[in-house]
Image (cartoon, rainbow, N blue to C red):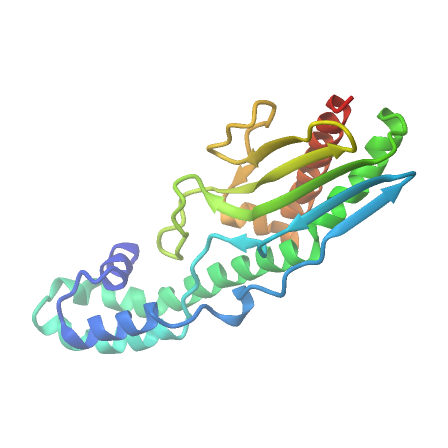
Length: 248
């Protein structure tokens, strides 16, 4: 069934009606469930002349490409005439008609769950909450200090950078974040550093990213992703504390 689906979905058939149907759907906008919400506001914490700002310049994203499950039935119907010229397709077509739509629906539901979790767990707010706890425990009062973390990317992506699809979802998704951290104090040279957590990270003290399959991330209504976002917030807060303490 998967082989047939791959053939149908990747344009392996040369029949014009089927090719046109697939091309039209690929050009269609993503389902509303995965459309980007409005940008999250910056999270700010001020204490005794110190300011800590976390900004998210883009909306969190999930590297999974959805395809309307019901369209698989239409594809199967359009593919029926193709079996006359390519009889081998007839062997797998009934299985495709039976299983493709439910398979796609499960994939879509998991991707929707992850998208909701990323929005429901705002990373800037979580970072500031973690920062407040870490700063009180480890850092002396430092007036006129400003620490700003501007995140340019955040979400789940594959190691290869390709989007997952329902019939090509073997690759893991990694929770990644990247941005720029700036520390400034009046009368001192500012510190600036690119911060990245991901498969290709070059940040010296960044740990390997947390990676798992789509199904594992979405298990228990996205609980593993919720936990991972909190760990990500703790890590980025620790970066802010560490870099701030380097500013004399």
